[in-house]
Length: 226
Image (cartoon, rainbow, N blue to C red):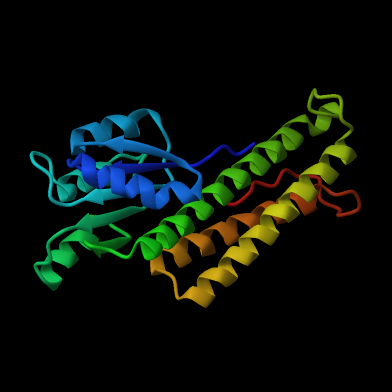
């Protein structure tokens, strides 16, 4: 079962963190505070996050340096980063943000609705990916236990396949709806690319599942696309 997504809020000013929490509380996800780049990196050692909201101007390790550390770590390199800044030094400053690995760069004061909508997209993508991982794990259990007539949970292979197919269909339907929403809203290129990657993974998993269905004529193991 997919739990609430975690959103990392990084800002050295408590009032800014409080404002972000007020804006994002409507998403009903878990909001985690970090008051410095160092504190953010520590949080990322133990928890998985759907998206990071990262202030650029911080004493010590600033947002650019923090993002560079995040992108160098294999565990965290794919987490979307949205930079927040109270200053605007023109296109060169913005380019530095994107070069550091940000998927978006928002100047303060920002529109609360726009920020909430952007974060919501990445939370939805994260949740769909978590669901997909659960389905892939079930499929691996079926592949590994096929020769033994089950996977040790008391279910017949046909019953497990039917359950897995139904769960996968639900994720496919949600992913399709999300993709249509992104098309309608002219979403960020990074969000669209992530959604497309999710659809490719779903297609690979569906093909692997179809190969296990009786009468397909395929008995060799099939690996879901990564």
